[in-house]
Image (tube, rainbow, N blue to C red):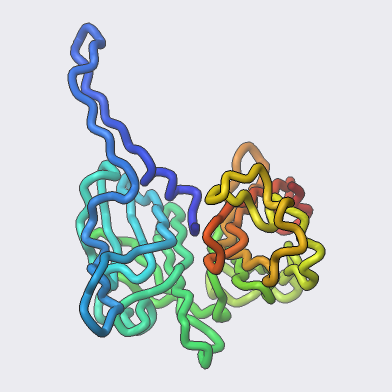
Length: 277
């Protein structure tokens, strides 16, 4: 549930109008988009299904760039969010961008000069991961520009020239924040901060953003299931957007261990704390 921009996949409607404003044609595209999704490149046996998750779209120099988990080992570019062209990372950064042939839940962001990419590698032996950037992503030309700590479900947020990371995944990880020097990607000392503590006691979970609505059984609220849960929630996919000087921290919960899901949005006047429901 990685990015608020993934709502663009839900419905993209094109209208072509005559001079008298009457609608001649309407074409509607619904999720899932009919893309190749790599056809399970990460699978070692028979490729049974297409697979992609955690979609991120960034707008850079009037083109849209789409990155998705376990997809083609690259990304896609589009002028209209409908027709997409596959692009692959250049050989110089393949080991930075990919876990052999794919990547998982990356952080991607753009400023006026570059698109930045950070992979959430599943290799737990790594303490750091590379930051790569491109001033020409349409032609797949990337370069390494720094390193950051290995993070689960990372989010890179650029605000007025300052670079911030948010991360956290799982029942025992808090949602955490820190700032980096945009020139070196070195972590700014003292900037690390926990924004949302993870739940340690199942009895702390009341309803709503802890467990979401159990649509499958048509119940109004998960509070009807109090005392019946055995696992703490597993928040994931922290993401942040800014609108009218307000910061909105989002994440998904209770996690993919459950057959229902919800998104949480917290609001703050500050980029690094004070988020409230």
